[in-house]
Image (cartoon, rainbow, N blue to C red; front, side, top):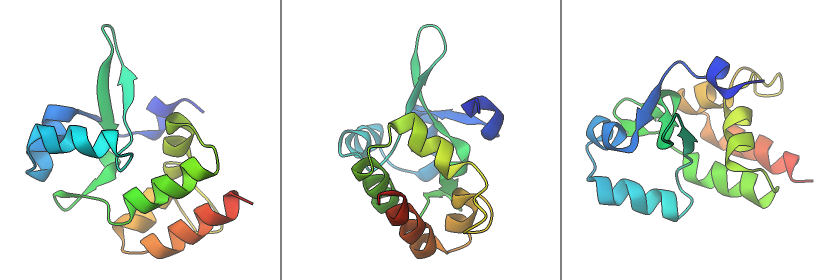
Length: 116
């Protein structure tokens, strides 16, 4: 499924920095460290983040750890985003929505099962 059909909106890195009140260099550091996933979109390509990764003015709690688990399972950044934004009956619902509701541990456990 196309990522755009799963995402309600996109944020550029400067927009994300403003929304979560972090300096842009810190956002870029999170990307470098693998604690945040971005997709290059448009022409020319611009790094963007789904708005669903932000909840109550912060990045989703547990996002960095879940991304680490998904990357360990050899998910690409796009595959990881697709998984986070797609309904999973085992959770139930979309992993991002469960994380926003405070169930990040359950989401991370589900991601760990994907690695096996």
